[in-house]
Image (tube, rainbow, N blue to C red; front, top):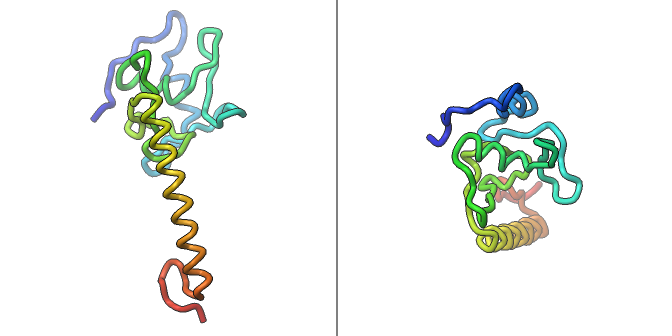
Length: 131
C-alpha cells in the first residue's frame, strides 16, 4: 500500500496530518474533506505557510511522494472532496483533461439510456415493466 511515509512535524507546530485529519471523514473508501472548499473549482483548500494549498495535493505529497512540476492529480473516484491518496493518480494536465471529457461523455450517454428506458415504461434498476 502507498501509505506509511514517516512524517516530519513542522517546526514548533503540529504535523500536517495531525492538522488535516480532524477535517476528514472516512466514508467507505473515500476520505471526504469537511473543511474549506474553493468556490471556483470546488476542491478542498487549506491555508499553509501563508498560501492556499489544495488538500488532495498536500495529502498525496505527505503520504506518498512529492509531485513533479508538471504532474496533476486525477481523482479516480471522481469525488473532488476525496483526499484519499489511494484514489489519486499523478498524471499530466493533458491526460487529466482527456479523462474528464471521457467521464463526462459516459455520464451523458448513461443519462440518455436511463431516459430511454424510463420512456419505454421500464424500471431502470430492474429493467422490468413498471406497473
